[in-house]
Amino acid sequence: MAAKTLFDKIWDAHVIRSVPGGPDVFFIDKHFIHEVTSPVAFLNLEKRGIPVMYPERTIATPDHNVPTVDQDKTIKDALSRMQVEKLRENCRKYGIELHDLGSDHHGIVHVIGPELGVTQPGMTIVCGDSHTSTHGAFGAIAFGIGTSEVEMVLATQCIMQAKAKKMRIRVEGEVGPGVSAKDIILYIIAQISASGGTGYFIEYAGSAIESLSMEARMTICNMSIEMGARGGLIAPDATTFAYLEGRPYAPKGEAWEQAKAEWLALRTDADAVFDKEYVFDAADIEPMITYGTNPGMGIKIGAAVPEVSRFSGSEQASYVKSLQYMGFEAGQPIKGREVDYVFVGSCTNGRIEDIRAVAHFVKGKRKAPNITAWIVPGSREVEKQAQQEGLVAILEEAGFELRQPGCSACLAMNDDKIPAGKYAVSTSNRNFEGRQGPGARTLLASPLTVAAVAVTGKIADPREVF
Image 1: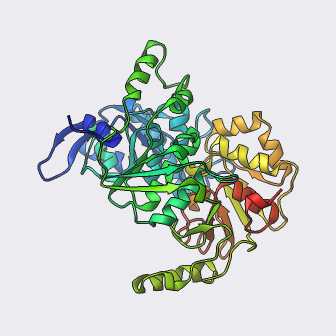
Image 2: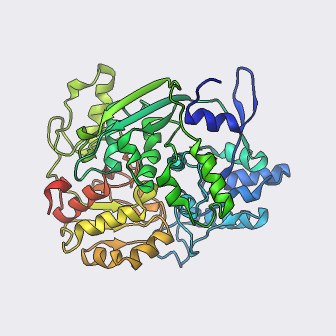
Image 3: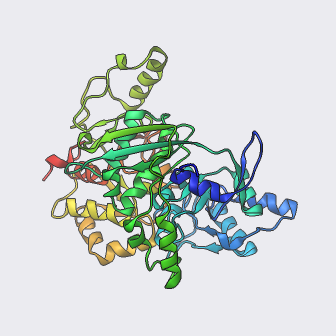
């Protein structure tokens, strides 16, 4: 039998039928939906008189368009309000489990799935959101889909997909102090570019990856999409099992032992071949920050903005445009530059470990007066845990504003916007023009770096702030 990668093993086990010269008909184990990409899909089902085939395989939560303040009140934005109401209506009509605003397990879809134990090794998982790749941290094939594909999955529990090429990225060794998973993935993207993973599904491996917690692994896989990849995954191991055990949807008793035995087989065979491989030395990774308008435009925090001459002729115009938007100049260091906002949250870094890291860093300190500091927990469970652990009190004493769970401040919905021209150092996943508000300037960084920025009021290396 030919050697297989982890990706091959999961993919091949879910193929219903292969179309010669075309895509595979591919079975989906779990389907997450939210309020943005599902309304049109449900409307088309209704028009065609088609039911949802397996409603028990779909889980819903409103997250993208919900405000992160006053969630107990009527949503002011008419479109956002309508989309949330439609999600509720469709879930009632089709018998789909909904974790609604105010419920115990409401939150960002890519936070609550793992938190509930819905996300498990060996699964195929889709959602109408590109950062579905987050769930690959558990050894699952997880990827984002469009509205027409959401409709297809609701109707058939299958999707038509061409099999992606396979890439392995190994990070070997130990990272230094002040370096987190966010720095690892920003470093990788800066090395291979924002399009370097296009056409591939990426398996992350190596001793530095294996040493990460599950929450850190989710950060890595979440940003696979930011290098153009279809998704990313990490082989399940004892860390995965320890995280999942006892969660509401995880197997129990004898079924748990059986599941673990099956999951242990989900590993790439020793002689399996990848289409492309990279190996990085963990010791070379330092706290990272972006300076441009895509996640590949990242540098070590003490480095200078690259010179224009480093780019090819065809790339130079867009590079200069990006720097003009950000208000930076080639060759200048950005460490020490004053900023206006910091944001900790999103499906990338809105988990309890992220909030702990910030709270421990700022304990006994106070945010700089020029900084507006937002902390947005990824779920009600994270919010509750932060309160129980005393993290909320520490953050509020330091001058941070703890908001309510949701994606809104990551993608500038409702009133969760950074004003035009202002700088925000953010733990989110995208720094595109206008991503956090029209004219807003976003710099991506780790929670530790954001904490250092908050207390100094300027771009700072967390290793130098005490």
